[in-house]
Image (cartoon, rainbow, N blue to C red; front, side):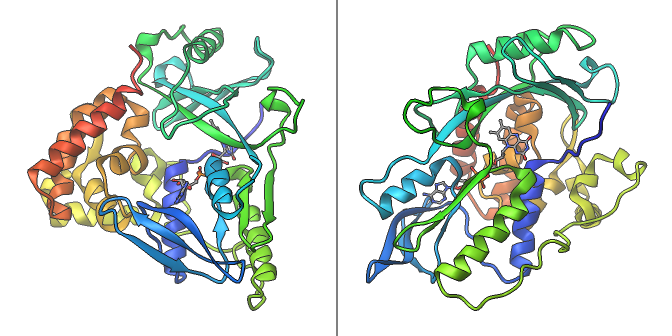
Length: 367
Ligand SMILES: Cc1cc2nc3c(=O)[nH]c(=O)nc-3n(C[C@H](O)[C@H](O)[C@H](O)COP(=O)(O)OP(=O)(O)OC[C@H]3O[C@@H](n4cnc5c(N)ncnc54)[C@H](O)[C@@H]3O)c2cc1C
């Protein structure tokens, strides 16, 4: 038996952004970098496009940091024409099944599997998350999809250790993610396990800084090294890093009893969400009879967490898509309606959002 830490990746990402805002950062979402701007061959900003209005505008900066995960090479190509790929995506698949499959509260780690990788069965938001795989990809899309062989491997291997063997029909959500691993040199073959998982940080001749690879586990260290490099490259006034001891937005020590209320994931914001429910009692109503999600969380996501689309709320604010894709589809019209009221959108917007989201969610449901 050993101990490990676990978290909700979306919640931490959102809380980090809120922390940045509180320390003076300006954040924008749904804004895409389309070119890198230069002054005397040195990077001086980026041109960006508002994904909703199509409007293009410039953002100037003394330092530009390219932290776009598996997409870093696209930005590097904007900087240098004959750029060689630095990242090799590796797909990892996760399957979600009901919590009863685990038969207890402890996670299971299978150290040796038929393909030599480890496999985890981890309790997560009252479900069990099974994974993962490590499939090298030559081409990738914004919405990667699990391959049949990855699904079969996970179900078969996990089935040997769970209370009962899960089948495709038991899978509540199936999804894939892409790891930005450092690209192998010619001749290194396809073995992504052997490709470095540590991060890669470098600056181009133009001064464009790129950070990629690495892990959530090491993100703070990665950020510290990146800012130190930016200070050097862009000749910014040197400053010591303060984030080692910095409390992240929402930070709160919780007891085991407090963690019984699943809303503890909001940390110190939980109280504000409960206040919202007191002020507007209709927001207390559940969004779906099977789950405890309420309208207050949707309103909170729009007002406090920059949610702009139904996908933002259902996938990356309350995680419904990742926990139960069919239920997320059923919740979609209600959530879209609450969002439309908050954002001042019309019925056509609601319908479009619901259609787009349901199409996306179908990719998370195994047929
Ligand atoms: C299956 C899987 C399992 C993992 N397990 C673990 C684990 O157990 N522990 C751990 O520590 N780490 C784990 N990781 C790694 C971790 O999730 C990644 O290291 C991390 O998400 C990468 O973060 P990032 O910010 O570099 O990139 P991303 O999270 O990919 O963020 C890049 C951002 O850049 C944006 N972007 C791209 N192009 C543009 C553009 N032109 N203009 C504007 N924005 C753009 C994208 O929209 C995206 O939001 C795992 C990863 C995967 C895929």
